Image 1 (cartoon, rainbow, N blue to C red):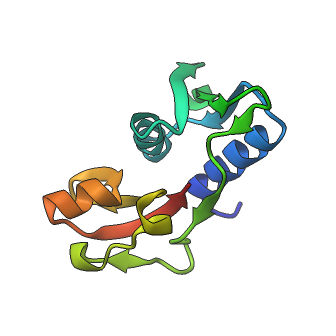
Image 2 (spheres, one colour; image 1 turned 45 degrees about the horizontal axis):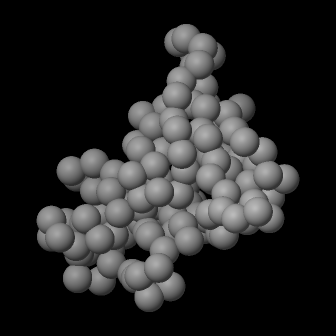
Length: 133
């Protein structure tokens, strides 16, 4: 069995669900997906985050957010940066600004998972997991 890229899987599920305007989407719960969901929630890209199931069957249920009468998804794009085959690291001076600061970069640092803004403020670099805008 090949190793799964849980982050790419998570981003793809969110992307697909928001394209078809689903209210919620389920993703397998791991430490990493929980942390990323927390960052997306605190940045206002997704609504509620809850868990269903137990043990290995545990899933994160993300409530997606839309704006306006036409229900435009708040998340316009999710882009995986660092892949299992090609990791992308950056120190805090070189952290990218996503769309001139409109979007966020999710960074895995030694102090946990955070946005590029927080990482810059704390002066820590790390692995750039994905861009969201």
